[in-house]
Amino acid sequence: MTNPGFIQLMGGVDSSGRTKALLVSEEGKILSEKSEDSTDPNISSIERVPEIKKVSDQNVISGGKKMVFIANIGAADGLLLGTEFLPGDSISLEATGNDTIAEISYNATNTIFMIVTLT
Image (cartoon, rainbow, N blue to C red):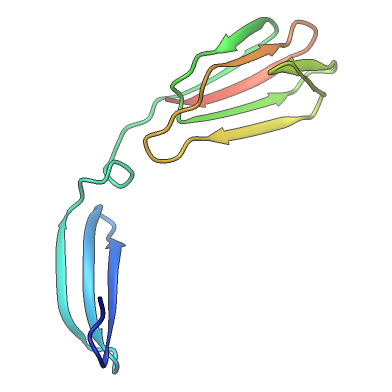
């Protein structure tokens, strides 16, 4: 909802994670400002646990991760989710909001995969 002669800005987040709403006049003067703590899980501070490893086996990356990066740093082909994964190939997956990434199967028995995850 807007007021005639005013520009309404809503939904900003300051550096401490507090939501802000501003009502600004056409001349750029702040007429009203409101801040409150956010209950949005995307904005609130959550400590994530990183893990990095190099593998040369056939296995799965367990589900429930927020971010997964996989690179074939070896000299031979591998498989990722049943698809050819060539030397030099890499992929980065990131879940948004409250979503997480499902289990990922890989086969790096003849090569080396570097796997970075964020839980």
